[in-house]
Amino acid sequence: MNPASLRWKIAVLVTLASAVVAAMVGLLVHRATWQRDLDIGEARARIALDRSLAPADRPGGTPDDVVTVAALPDALAAQLRPGRTVIWYGLDHRDEPWIWAAQLYGGDGRQAVSVQISMGSELLSLYALDRNMAKAALLALAGVVPLSVLAAELPNRRLRRMARTAREIADGNLAARTDAGGRDEIAEIGAGLNSMAAGLQRRLLSEQRFTADVAHELRTPMMGLMTSAELLPDGEVTDLVRDRVRVLRTLVECLLEISRLDAGAERADRVPVPVGEVVEESVQRTGLQAAVTVTGAPVAETDPRRLDRIIANLVINAHRHGRPPVEVAVEGTAVVVRDHGPGFPDELLAHGPQRFRTGAAERGQGHGLGLAIAFGQAEVIGADLTLANAPDGGAVAILRLTSPAGRSTGLTHG
Image (cartoon, rainbow, N blue to C red):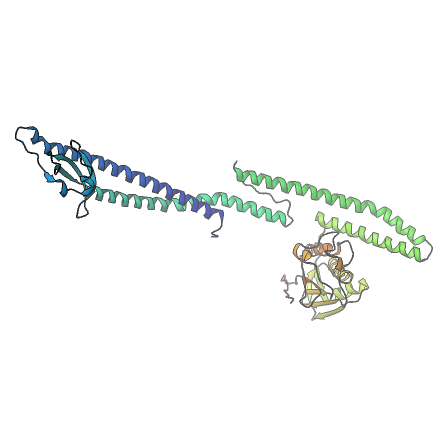
């Protein structure tokens, strides 16, 4: 029922067009009918005048309806000329419509022969015709309006289907397609949308295959490089080389994980998991400082390995891009990871994590893969991961898991 929708705009346009057509037709019928009545009245007036003048053609005859010129309406009297018949329409002193036919009589110009034909009945008939045409137009509009709404609903429904498909594509479902039907402009838009989605899907699959192939091809030389780095003699330069090799190995592993997530090859092995224990162990394995608080003894139905990966990435991200202290709170089946740094950039909050982009310089350096992997793993285990900024500063990541009963525990963070 949105008044700004295309359906109502089309309905209003059709209604206005119908009203204009009805008004123009009514005006033309009104004018034609009245002009016909005036022509008939004029002919009757001429015939009556001729009959009144007929006795004057006989010897000693006197015309009927002789009146003084002063008794005639001023507009009619002003048009009288010797030998000229004047036909004039107007209102008498009682505001009744009449047609006069008059001609001067006598040589002094003070008398005239005049007849009157009443147009009252014709005018009343015209008013009745106007009312009937108005009623007919209203009845026609009463039928046109719902029919135009129904007619406009058909293309509007097709456009809504395409809009839903476009939203699905924007949400990441590049396999979504629309069936606009028909051979009109809407069908052309639908075909263009399907073509665009197919092109995007081909490009994305090509990029995913390229990423997977690159990561896979890098694994073998990466292992050789790590082995070679371990054989180097100890020293400051060797430590630097080993550190860079470890960074490169982490990047390759992340690329492989991203490629598997993009391909949809990951499947969760869900079991009842003590959330507090898994979170504490995950934080310990990172080797980073983080205060962990657990409320109660929550249990969630999830994949412990993937949960460990998500928590580790969030803690590492908090240390790398935020500032200590880093706090991890387990409240029910919700896990909150918070730092006290500058917070997430607005672009990151609006559009989500972008690969190989850290969002802002103040968030530190990195490849931007940690949060992308965390979001991907959260989707695999059916968890909800949201990012926010605390009112008093700092970035907040909230992971909501599913309880064994199948209910997701909600949590609000101010």
